[in-house]
Image (cartoon, rainbow, N blue to C red):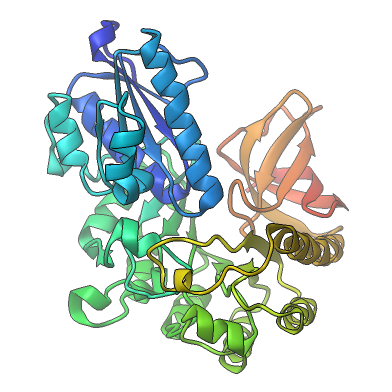
Length: 440
C-alpha cells in the first residue's frame, strides 16, 4: 500500500474491536491510498507522520483497551515520534466531549459516520465511487461484507444504537458490485456482517431482503462460500432457510446470538422473544438444514439474574449442544435502559458464571469434534507455519471458531487460500487434526 516515503504522507491506521470496525478501516485506507498517502494497517512498529485510531466502545473492557491505546499514542506524540493523532470510531462517537477534555493531545475526534470529515482534515478527497473498491486487510481469500449500518433494536444492555445509529441497509446492487470486485481480487469467502442481518431491507421497502440478497451473491462467480453472522432470533425469516438449503455456497453455519433463555431475563433484556419461541426456532433451523452448525452468544450477570435463571441457562446449553458458543459478562453501560437497574451482581460472580458456561461448552465441543474423526471436509487453508497448515471447514468462521491443523511435512502442494479435501484424524476441544487427501 506504500506509494511515497515522505513522512507527511505516511499514515498508520490502528483498528480495535469487531469486524465492522475493520471494514470501516479498510474503506478509510482505500480512500487515503487513492489520495496518494502511504498507509499501513496495524503495523508492528509505529512512527508515521499521522496515526488514526479506530476505536471500540461496546463494553467496559473494549473501552478500556481503546482509552489505553489512545494514551499510548498520545505519549508517542508528546515525544515527537508521531506528528498528528486522530481518533475515530465507536468510543469517539459516544464520548467525544469527554475525550477532548481528558486527552487533549489528540488533534481531533471523529464519530462512526464522519469519514468524509476526517478525510477533509487530512486534505484528502472523499470519493463515493470507491466504496466498492475496498483494500482488504484480511487474508486475500476471505473478506467481510457489511450489509447494513446501525440497529433499530432496543436491547436494554446494548449501546450499539448510541454509537452506530439507526439501521441503514446498503442497497443490494452496491453489495453485489462489492462482491464482484472482491471476487476479482481473489476473495473466495464472504462473511456477511451487520448488527442484525435479518433486518436487512426493512428500511428500504418494508421487506426482509436477506434471502434475495443471498441468492444474488451466490451467483457471483469466484465466490465459493457465504457465511452469515449476527442473525437476530426474533422475527427470523424462514425464507432464509430455504435459500441456505438450495444454494451450496451458503455455509451450513449461522451465528444466532441468543443472550439468555430465562423468560424473566429475556424480558428485562427487551429481546422480543421468549424461551419457547427460541427453542422452536432452533428446532426449525436444524430440521430445515441438517448438519448446520449454530454459533451463539450468551450474556451472564445481567441485573437481577438469579442462580435459578443461570441454572436454567446451563440446562439449556446442555440440552441444545451448540456447536459454537461465546460468553460475555454484563457491562453496565450508561445511556442504555438497563443502566437504570442496579448492577447488583459482582464481577467475580459474573466471571464464575462465564467460566462455568465455557466449561460446559468445552466438553460439548470436544464430543462433537470426536464425532468428525474419520470423515473428510472441504477445507479452506488460511495460513501456514513451519509445522502446520491451518484451515477451516464451512462450519468455522475465522478468529472465533475451530481450526483444522494439517502437518506441513510432505504437504508442499497445499497452498494458503486454496481449498483442499482434508480427512480428520484427531480431535481436540476446539480444534481438529487432519491430513490432506487431494485438492478439490
